[in-house]
Image (cartoon, rainbow, N blue to C red):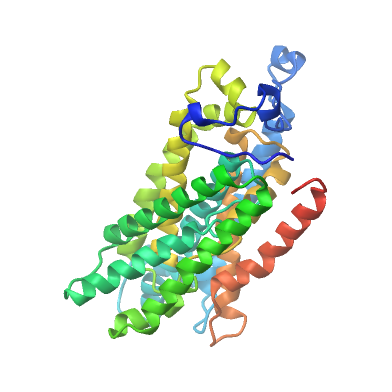
Length: 378
């Protein structure tokens, strides 16, 4: 497989013959059969996609209920529902549900979906099956920017606001994304691009650990769990900011579904149907960086979700069409993170694991299986 080397300026694209620059065509790049269209029946792919969305939605609902009910203080679904309907009060169960468990499970669902969607965009942009914010070092760059902003503001006796965290993480994400784009133009194979991204991530992670280790403020020292990836400590204010940012960006992403579908078929085809490829690339960079920055700002770097969830969604839907895959991607990421977070806090209770460690345990085999299937991957 020939590596795709993206660039923001189309005039600087690889001068190889047009046929060699074409991407592999998706599984469903041809329209539905004329017989199905004439009969008015819904194509089988859409029925399958709807079934997958429904199954993932049911799994997510079950995990959300389990995440609220299971813990050091157990509760039945009926008790949890009564506590939610009655609103916050002074009882112990109400405080646990409203202040700890409910914002945490909602954060894991929303941020996990955003991370999966970001991974799907990066895989489409780089034409690389194992591109995601964690592997390319984008999450590590956002993490470094947030830690640095916290140290500077705390030194000035100020507090970093939720929107400030997102802004700092976005700056770090864009910086490391720029480094990845530069490397993508210079390296000749996909494996070298991934190795270069991992090295950038290691440098950013080392710098962040250095800042945290030598910080004097206790608030910075307590960021160690966040820096390893965790949904603990999620608050309603953080959840509100994260939800607003992710919903706004997700609307933009879904609006780009048709241009993305054309882009999957190759740059020449996208140009032929009127897609502004240069503008589309800029939008992909911005929205994917903002999604990964929002996740990192509130949960730290979380590994393998952006790789595993999109591929599992494609396999389940049986299609590469963005309009069918992206909802499944978001739901798959939500299910993946909710399940891993539940295991992280209950498997060895009262000791809580890093959620990134649990996602790596389940996500790494998906990546290994993917690379074994692609015998021609280089």
